[in-house]
Image 1 (cartoon, rainbow, N blue to C red):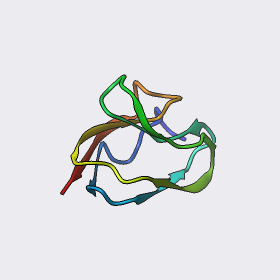
Image 2: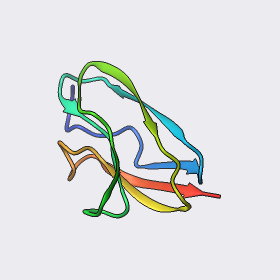
Image 3: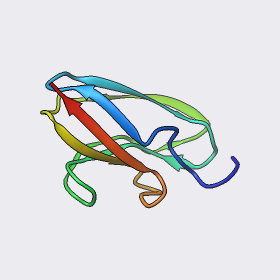
Image 4: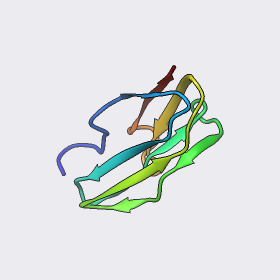
Amino acid sequence: MTGLPQFDRDCLAAPAETGLTIVFDNRDPESHNVDILDFPGGTPLFTGKIVTGPKTVTYTVKPLPSGTYYFRCDIHPLRMHGTFVVGG
C-alpha cells in the first residue's frame, strides 16, 4: 500500500427503505471495515466485520430510512470516513 489508508469514495448513496449490499475490496494488507452511523460519533446502524486484506467481502445492510448518515472504518476513523446519503 502506498500512502495512508483511505476509501476510494467519500460519499455513497442508496435508496431508502431498501436493503443493500456493499462489496468491500480491501486491497492492502491492513485491517479495515465499514461502519454506518447515524452521525459522526453516533450510534452504529451497521458494523461490517473487520477484513484483513487483500480480500473482498460483501456486506448486507438492512433497509435504512431516508437521511444523511456517516460511514467510517473502525480501525482508521480519522482517515477513512465519508457521508452516506439514503434517499426516497
